[in-house]
Image 1 (cartoon, helix red, strand yellow):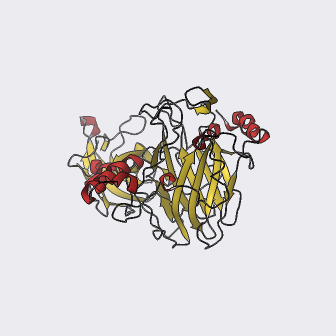
Image 2 (cartoon, helix red, strand yellow; image 1 turned 60 degrees about the vertical axis):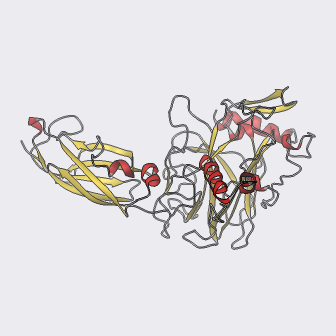
Image 3 (cartoon, helix red, strand yellow; image 1 turned 90 degrees about the horizontal axis):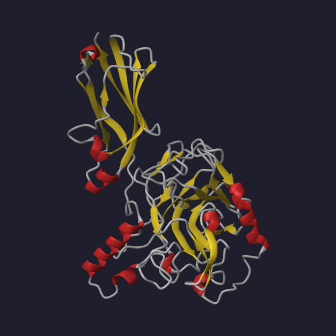
Length: 440
C-alpha cells in the first residue's frame, strides 16, 4: 500500500485522540501511560533494550567505537509495543550531524525486492549508503542535531521515499550537541509500521481490538546509523556494528550489512508457543542476561547468552569492522582463442585477510566484472553487483561466474587483440585490473 493510501488511517488516529490517556486496563495492551515520547528513553525497561551486555561485561554496542569520537555515536536502540503502537527510541549523540533508523518490515511473497537497496540515489535523505545481507528497509526515521521533530519516511518504489506528514503521530528528539542521555523517539501506529498491511479488529482471544498482521511470525530487521548532514556522504557509526566498519572520511560509502532481527509474534493469546499473527503481549522484547542466566553457572550462562543473541542479529556484535580492498587478481590462461571454444577463468582476493570462519562464511561482498578494449570501451559485462562471500571468492576453485569466453555482450566473438579485465568492489570501494588477450 502506498503512503497516500495510508494517510486517511494515519489522520484518523489524530482525530480520534489516539494519544490521550489510556483507555485499556491491561498495561500490555496500552502503554501510553508509561511510554512518553519526549526524547528521553529512561522509561523503557531492560528487556525492551535491544543492544545488551554479555555475561563477561562486553557491550554489544560500544559507546566509543565511532570514527568521529564519543559525541557522534549510536549508544542504544529500544523497542516495545502495545495494541496500538510500536514505540521506538534511539539513544545517541549526534554533534552537528544526523541519525537514521531503518526498518525492514514487509516481506515480499514473490521474492522481489520490497524496499530500499541503498540511499545513494534516493529522492530524499540521499547518502553514500547501501544495504546488504538481505535487509531492504521500507520505513525509516531520521533527525538532525537540534531538530525536535524527527521525520518518518516510507519506501515508495526504487530510490523513492515519501514522507509521512509531520504531526501524524508523535516523534520527538532531544539531541543537543554533546549533551548525554538524549534520544530520538516515536510512537508508530501498526498500520504505518507495516505500510498499510494488516488490520486492526476485535479479537475475542485478547478481549480487545488488536492488530492482525498479514504474516504470522514476521522477522523485523532493524539498523541505525549516524551520518553527516550533507547529501551524498557517509557516516562514522552504526548499530549493530556493520561488517565493513566505518571511516573517518565521510566521502567513503558505507555498507550496512548487519542488523537486529526482531520477532514479535512467537506466542498466542494464552502464552503458548504458537504464533497467531498478533503481536505478543506480556513477554520480553529481548530477554536480559539476568533472565537467561538465572540459576546457571558461568559456562552455561555464556552458552545461553550466545544462543539467544544469535537469534537477534545477522551476526552478533561486537564486531571489529574491517574495510576490505581488492588484492591480487589472476587470469588463466592469459590468452584465449574463442573460435576454438577457449575460455579463461579469473580469481581475486581481498585484503586484509579474514581468518574467522564465521565471518568468511557470512561476510558477503558485491563485485562487478567488466572487460574493456585498449581504448577504454566496455565490450562485455560479466556480472554487475554480484554477491560472493569471502569464502567463495577465496576457495581453491573460483566461482563459476568468474569466466570469460572472448565474446561481447551480444555474443559476438571479439576481434583479436589486448583487453583489460576490471573487477570493482562495490559500491566503488576499490578496483583492480588484469590484461588478457583474444587470439583470432
